[in-house]
Length: 206
Image (tube, rainbow, N blue to C red):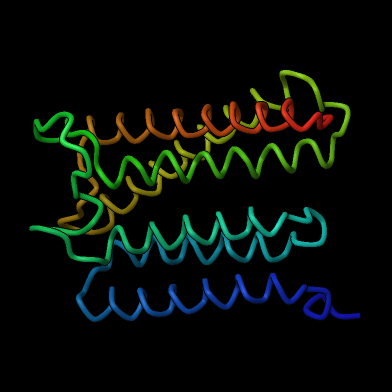
């Protein structure tokens, strides 16, 4: 039996949705000469392949796959959908603070919190699936949160490579990077609190 034949119909649907929006946004970025986000498209394709290759090993729940797909869509939209004088990533959703880079609360920050919250959830799933002895331990919650923050730092390294490789990026400076890391951490911690609360409420051994 080939690997493709082992992919479930529900997983093919998620893959099809991801393929449609990645193709559409890639065409859009190329049409407007946005070479910065092509780097992110390539990164996302690599991550999508990693998830696809590990489907039967990891057995991601359908909700988790949809959460990952939504993260990708929000990311693509953030860099490609016009909003105000720029794109969605620069849009202030809630006017908490408005002081240059120190602006809260922006679309970018919400996506960072959501995305690395999902990343922590995925890491928790992988940890407790392959190392069930970690269930009901602090390790099951602390390690995924910290690992998700590490992935967030890797994301910032990719953004830095875009700054080095491409002129006139919209990545931002030190304060923007620091805020991104803070929201990555916030999302990861909140995700693990939610997972722990759900497990306790349902009496799960997680």
